[in-house]
Image 1: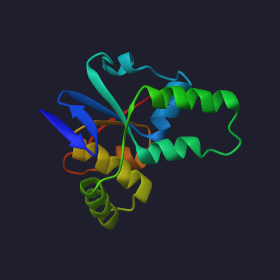
Image 2 (image 1 turned 135 degrees about the horizontal axis):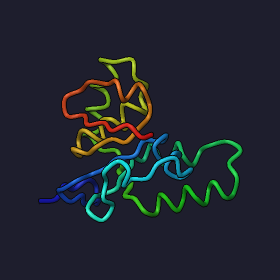
Image 3 (image 1 turned 180 degrees about the horizontal axis):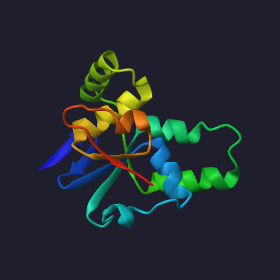
Image 4 (image 1 turned 60 degrees about the vertical axis):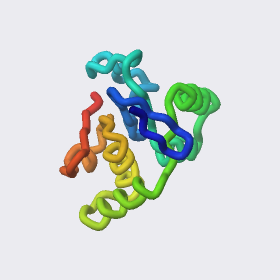
Length: 137
């Protein structure tokens, strides 16, 4: 069975969502996915459109940093916002002090039944039904 999100097909199996800090640390080689027990050949690697926006909107980004980010983004599926993610993000935002971009990322993870990779303490400490969080080093 596949989950369809506005033209994006996500296969059943292990799904991994990266938040912004997880991407930056991965690019900086502060961890690798195998150290977290993630086999990239058997996992769907995803990130939210919000993460893409955060990564590409950094000030004073060097050409090399932008190239590394674009290479990462080419290797993952970008999950757009849809009504289900929007509703879940609003629900989380209304009930917690977590900022809206992080609520959207968490909601994306919940809706896709994916593991969220992060080192953001707000997300690591967020207790929400369906949220699966894994700390990056």
